[in-house]
Every structure is written in C-alpha cells, then in structure tokens.
Image 1 (spheres, helix red, strand yellow):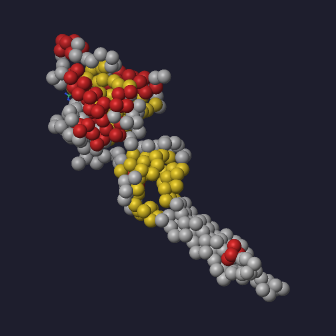
Image 2: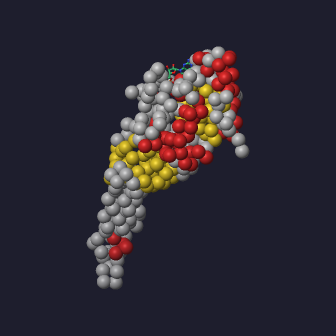
Length: 331
Ligand SMILES: Nc1nc2c(ncn2[C@@H]2O[C@H](COP(=O)(O)OP(=O)(O)OP(=O)(O)O)[C@@H](O)[C@H]2O)c(=O)[nH]1
Ligand SMILES: [Mg+2]
C-alpha cells in the first residue's frame, strides 16, 4: 500500500501524573516546643492536554507515540509549602482532531480552534497537608492525604481532513494524477481502480505566496454509501472540505450519469455534502480532439462550473486553480 502523508488515526496510552502527597509535618522552632501541624499540600499531577494548531495538517507526528506520560506532582513540605505541580504534556494537533475513548469508542471532544486547549487525561489532585486536619479535638493530626492516582487510558485521535478542496470521482478518474500535477504530493498512480487506498493531501501553490490544500481520496463507486468499495470510509474526510471538485474522465461513457451517481452517493451518505460548492474537472481531455471536445460540451451537467483538463499535458490546470481559488474565497 502506498505510504500516505496523511495519518488520520492514532492510538496511544495516555497517562496523567499522580498528585503529590500532602505533607505530615509539625512546626519546629527553637522556642515553640510543640509547634502545630504545618504540612503543605501535594502538587497536582500533570495533565495530558491537546492543543489546536492551524499549522498542522496530520497526526503523523504522533504515529509512533505509544505512551504519553505526564509527570507526577511533588509532595508538600513543612511550613505549608505546596509541592510543585507535575508538568503538563501538551500535544499539538490539527483542527478537526476528535479525541475518543479507545475502549468504548465514545467521543470526548473535538479540537476546532487554533490555540484551543482541552484536558484529555486529568492529572491527579495533590493530597492535603496535615494542617487541614487540625480540629478542636485533634490539634496534632498525624495524618495527611496521599495524592490522587494518575489516570491511565487508551485514547484514539481521529482527524477529519481539513482540506480546502476534496476530489470526488470514480476509481481511475485521474484524481491522484491531478494532485501530483498541481502539488508536491506523490500519490501512487495506476491504470487500475482503487490505486489510492488512503487519502493524500497536497499543498497547491497558487500565484505569489498563496496556497490551498487539496485532498485526494479513494475512488467512490455506486453503492459506496452502503459500504461498497473504499470511498465511503473516507467520505467523512471531505465533510469539512469547503468545496468539492468532481473529477470525471473525458472517456467516461456518460459524464452526466457519472456525476449523478456520485452526487447520489454523497447525498445518501450525508445530505449536507450537497450544500457544498461544486466544481467539475473533465480529466484526461488529451484523449479528445477538438471536435470531440465540442460534442462533449453538451454532456456537461448544468449548474456546475466545469473545465476540461489534462494532468498529462498540463492543459488548463491554471484555469482550474483559478476556479478553485475563486470558489474557496467567494463570499
Ligand atoms: N491520458 C491521460 N491519462 C491520465 C490522465 N490523468 C490520469 N491518467 C491515467 O489514468 C489512470 C488512473 O489515474 P489515477 O490518478 O491513479 O486515478 P485515480 O482517480 O486516483 O484512481 P483511484 O486511486 O483508483 O481512485 C492512470 O493510468 C493515469 O496515468 C490524463 O490527464 N491523461
Ligand atoms: Mg488515486
């Protein structure tokens, strides 16, 4: 299978720090023979925290992290000194990262904003020092609270792809070839269906210093919404894409029909997908001569901006980028 530059799933063991123990201590001063209790509280154990970062696109950096462990809190000390908190571990993640409990599959939260921090695994509370337990009947408590245990749990992080444009098309339509023609991504390309098994992301440079992110996902086939083929598993990745670029090859039997089937699968999967802006690229147009291309014009579905492109001869790729850019930045 092709290595994807897009990792959408990681699983790791997350362990927060234990709270530090409260101190059992009595004040000792030269002229105070029987000083009162003055044991300080233990520090809080370190949390495991997720923080949103717009500069990140994948969970690749967490792929080999099997254990994430935060420091324990320090014990309290005499003189009511509170122990230091354990250091938190902060994991930077792309926006759209969903944290789940690996055992139950239950969703905990989603990171949606830059800089947003959510505690994933809470550090243990520090124990109370003995001075808290002083009472009228017990002036000298020989007791301090232990720190709370840390939590150890298996966590799944999933990322819904945050691309600006998602490629939607049947297998073999030329989606990966297009991505490789307009970006530095090197997806596998093959003259057989289902070459792409995992989504690929590419950053497309657009004039000057601008860029947008394109997502190449596996081909979608009729029945995909009912679990046929591979595409449906990845359809969730395009939920957030701001626009959808349909890719239909010029040698398709019926462009309109292919388009309708693709639309139908999207709708069955999630009707909201139809609210997105759509563009159509008729790919492999190098296979057509002028005359055929004229005839094909009639085949273009109504109400969708369309362009004939060829990734092989680089035809109209700039025009396509213009259309994408405009669609992304319209309104
Ligand atoms: N003539 C011509 N062939 C192309 C063009 N773009 C892609 N192809 C060919 O079409 C075949 C399929 O290309 P891919 O880019 O792998 O298609 P895909 O849509 O990613 O396919 P899946 O990953 O299976 O969904 C390959 O043999 C490509 O060389 C083009 O612009 N012109
Ligand atoms: Mg492909």
